[in-house]
Image 1 (cartoon, rainbow, N blue to C red):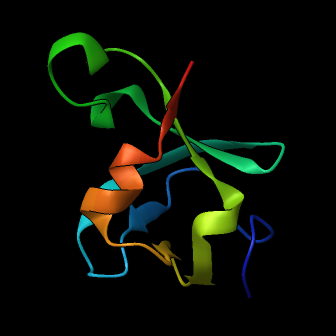
Image 2 (image 1 turned 30 degrees about the vertical axis):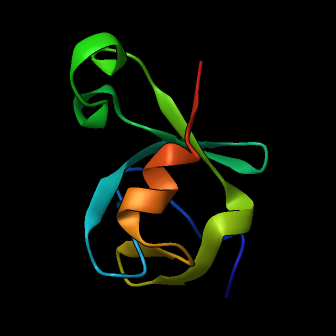
Length: 80
């Protein structure tokens, strides 16, 4: 299953390489909103970040695996 269907609050989001990207706060349209605790450092700290649903490769158990490695997925995040 790909896309945002089946994604639930508190699931772990991991890159294709298995590296932790964040934790799902909620699904907002076709985007995954990550919790603030995974917002990073510096000017990113304390802000929600979003991952486009098009990056979701599969949803399995309590994990959302992305089609991009974590370091690439992080650069594609949208901050709001």
